[in-house]
Length: 337
Image (cartoon, rainbow, N blue to C red; front, side, top):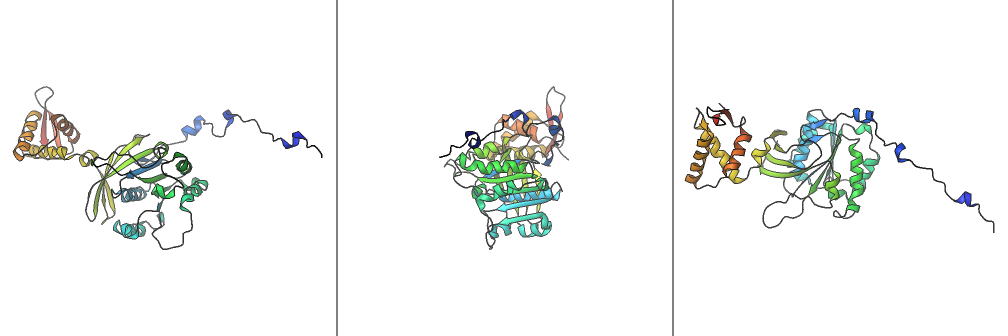
């Protein structure tokens, strides 16, 4: 038998020098990148953002209206919303039909609730989108709702979820933004939400920002939610959002106002009442005394003095005005009008 030449069957590998990689950054690479906010203090362009909550907290409708707000302000040209969770009845109640009419081709809403032939594999769609991502997607915001439907394998195993997360990390460099929705695990009997996301630690480690979504109140056409940043790589701030499905509008309000507990909320109502009853001004000391008297008379629990002082500082200029009195370091409070 003829002996093969060892030189011909042994593969030759080129010497690799990491210092000459195509991925080595140059000063110009950084200089050419200009950070751009899609929503000031909330979402920056080219970021991977997670929004998560317990079921029924309004994370899907909040995400949809936030995206439409960005589109309305012409900071992006298109939204691609891939929804694997919600039925047509739910989407109708959110005003989606009118949103689709309003934004036309700029809002592409892909939904498994549509009676049509399935033409893509759910667990493969993110990988395929990532492979085909290009600079042509630069003004497109893409949203995945919810991420559990796009994972092949266990949500709790890092090795199972990492391929999808890696694909989304690549996508964020080409898309205006990549957002994904996630759920929470069941909470304990205490009623206190631990604000933990569901699944492997990689979901939290891989995103740039993570927001905990909480429903504050809801009527037929009006929803108020808060979004609290649980992971911050940028200068993001908590948000309170009011959605009106009748006029397809969204507005931003004071997060602290909508995140007060019952005792803080009651104390703030007394504070506003006392200040309104004193158009010529009232000192901080007298204000706190009168608030405590009102609470005692109503047999109502309110927060402590330190918490009330924080409330007074936060809402100064928003619910009332404040000035410095004649006595050093004293404050006098007046109605806004």
